[in-house]
Amino acid sequence: MPTKTVWITGATAGFGAATTERFLRGGWRVIASGRRAERLQALAAQHDSTQLHTCAFDVRDLGAMRTAIADLPEAFAGVDLLVNNAGLALGTAPAQDADLAQWQQMIDTNVTALVAMTRLLLPRLIERRGALVNLSSISSSYAYRGGNVYGGTKAFVTQFSQNLRTDLHGTGVRVTSIEPGMAETEFTLVRTGGDQAASDQLYAGAHPITASDIAETIWWIATLPPHLNINRIEVMPVSQSAAGLQVHRD
Image 1 (tube, rainbow, N blue to C red):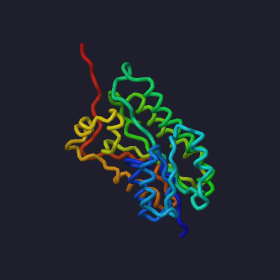
Image 2: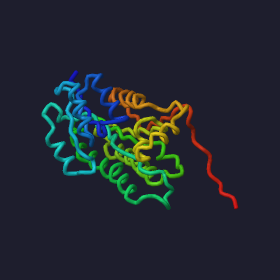
Image 3: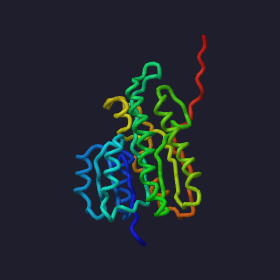
């Protein structure tokens, strides 16, 4: 059976790093991209160049994205699976107090960059009858204080995934939206500007989702028979459930 190739964005931490390791263990060729070149260099040093190709760029830089795709080595040029993992949340303030620059960065990363990456790789995915996994969030379905634009971007990812399924009807390409709940990665550190105490407090005693949990979920989806499509999958730790609605009283 021919070796398959997966491109994982945001591969330098969290879900992306764990997914990279899972697919390497599974014998796939992996294209790992991310902003942090030093982490990619360390990763590349641990693996054979015939199995792992790394490319460092910010997904918000469309020119760099196009270059990375154009410069793929021949062995990695046929992409069977795209994992759109790169994304972030910034800030926890309510909308009326939020930083507009942070809102824009979330939109540029979680929406604009994901759309661009998808469009540029779709011809290759169609040619290979491949698959696309988009990392959304339970924030796409459940509102919470301070979620504002982050939740909006993830709602876009979920809806975009469903519309891609419709547009790709008949091509054989599979599309999945994964919507994780509380997961302990670098997510909260990024969101709070590096506040380790806030991160520790959030996850303390909660037994949250781990990066490897999501990596195994992506691996399961990718290795299903090609006639099966997982449209959406919502994953929470057992300790988490949907909260009730707010009521303000005079």
